[in-house]
Image (cartoon, rainbow, N blue to C red; front, side):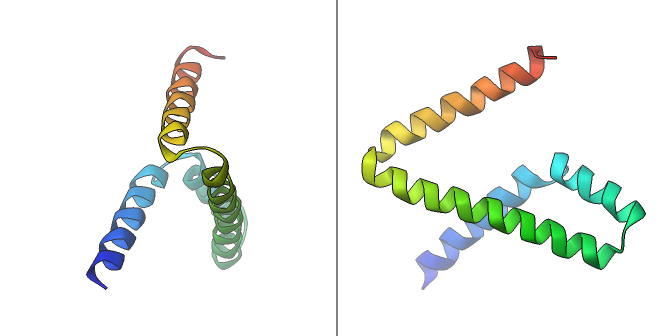
Length: 90
């Protein structure tokens, strides 16, 4: 059981740090200025849950097609590419 909790805390902590104060949070703050905060909360949670469900399903499917090592390298390159594009893009 300890291994599962360790993995869960790692995932929760990582996702929290990566998502905190990103564009999703900024959009949620803007929505909360106009709409009911409970509705905004439910909408944000639902949208993030749907995006996460798709990501997890796609990741599981891709792991059957490509070795984990190659997926990790590919995702790293995409992440770096998006960062560079964000810096130099318009």
